[in-house]
Length: 432
Image 1 (cartoon, rainbow, N blue to C red):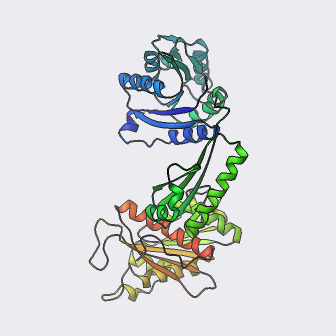
Image 2 (tube, one colour):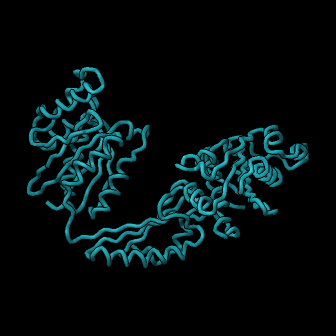
């Protein structure tokens, strides 16, 4: 059977209730697309035997391949094994090799296998157990037959640390993409431009009957432009088409396009700083260390990131960043102002000895706003060694407290990036 279309199934109450974010489905979709198998549906279901079996039957009528994650643990709410058996009209049996592997897992940790884990060795009689080399939950490979159609179903454990290696070792070798089909994708990440504005610039490129197909998605201020070829051309010719469309998108997006690899502005900024052998420090108020956290989330950030000053109070701005205390007196500009954030950036540059310094001060809300400075007002400054001019900008961020802080930190990174690529005159979204 050829696998042309796939459905990704995520299982668990914690997913349907929004308590846990499903990252598995996106990862699996990316792996399948790279092989020329196109995911056409993502489904999330709770820990319900009837709901899960019903969804499996429905999906098996629509696609040739279903990959499910979750529900393979040892507790009463782990129902994937039973649901697959029900969908296949099959019974559960104990897989002897799986039981041996589970017992060995616990023995290797110096303790006997709890009887509760014995259920993890069960599988539908006509299914194949997929060994788990890093955990106790074997996967499943079954085929659901309905009328004249058949659908291959792979069930994998939910923890990514177990799911990823099982997918690579047990699933990939069993996949059969169409030999005459080529699927190629590219993604370009932009910041500082609205999705509708970017779509207007792209114009006819986004017509839905194009191949390659161009589309946009927005998340956390980052607008990603996705380009996909799906057809019968050889891979080399498909890549030539993608190169042409990508070039046009790059020209239209201009300075807002910051990466074709990672949606993280911090990754892009650190890469530019490393190339230039330059360093960065931060001075933060309303973001409370979020900007520094974004930078230190990137492996190897220590090669360019000097550190930061967390100046949440006016007193801290004075004592740590050297801001003139008179700026906080009655009738003076106050903490959320161009004057103060400019002084913060200069203070960070001087006291931390970096090539560049970013400073942020604003009103994240929900309280603290006023008519001239409503909630969402944020000032961001960038100071650089050897440059007397400080780039200071005012923004009106929208959303809740978390959104205001997130946008502020990302906009600070975007300002520095624009400076590093010689595009400091480019205005950013939500800039006043």
